[in-house]
Image (cartoon, rainbow, N blue to C red; front, side):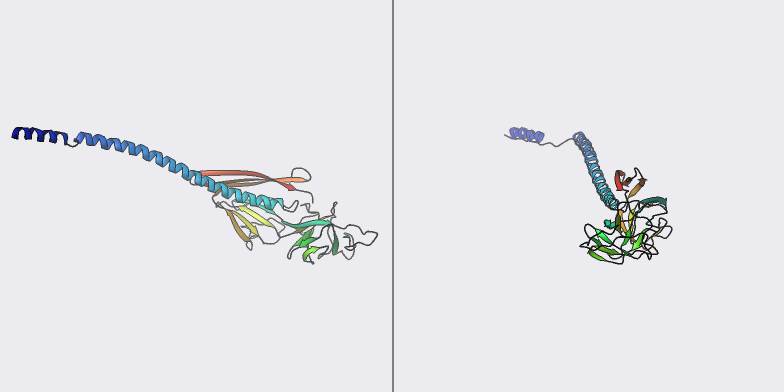
Length: 285
């Protein structure tokens, strides 16, 4: 009986023995290899996700900035866009249009429901009012009138020779009065067009990586910049950060059509996004 019990105990011990040291080392090495490979896959997937998130954020920021700029330019006064390089960046300036219409150029024979008040460019003393042809217009406080802006020395809204301060302010005006400043306007519009305009707006792509919008800073014959102090009183809005490159290319194009080509590059964390958009401009004053 004792001999049988001893053999049974030895069989149990043989079957219950643990791993050897070599087996443990092999398992540890295999687990290390699998863990390293798995960590590499996870790291690459995480990095790809972070890169896609960064690109999406940069794209969204660039799209919003370019859309705002394009919308502003589409509503600008004809021949008022000007571009200059200064302060390590690019400046673009234009005059926003608040309203537009046609003025009466000649007195009619019969009575008119809205009056009979033409704009006489040769009157003495100078004419200071005119009747609006067609739909009435809104004239906000602080706005000005501009007629036949050519962007030249003879008719330049920035110099002020074809810009007049409005005397009548309100909504739905059929007659507009203004301060003639020595004469009504220098040149008549062939299409009898007039524009109600606000003070200029500037965009600045700085070397510090910012795209900024400057407004409510007044009029200047020469294009204002931050370095010249011409924008010191402006209201500033930051539209985009991480700007690595920016360019505004103004093309006069055909007689009645111009364009601005906008190039905007944003970069962050090794990711770069570049957007290019061309905005067509109405150059008919």
